Length: 134
Image (cartoon, rainbow, N blue to C red; front, side):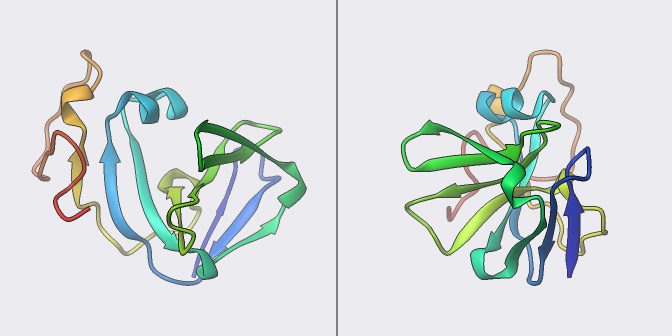
């Protein structure tokens, strides 16, 4: 079981299953959405995800049709995103978790889009787009 919260602690979440396909994404959209050099994202089965507090405080934004990002309307923290093409799982930013996770990061993705000021030093595989098999 993983638990997490937004910055102001008004939205709380629980994940009862595993987190899969964890990557550091350097694309410009993830950089803009997180305000950082990259975002660390993973997938969670929709049935394993519960908002335990603050459902009414979630706002949403759709940059692309069928893809929706949910964030806390009080503090702006990203909570999760959904994709109408794959309703069986959601994507979650790992920074929301308050508990340690056991799964490991697989790779750095979209590294050719990384910020010019970022110094990428890693032993993880690096890909120009998504990791192979996705």
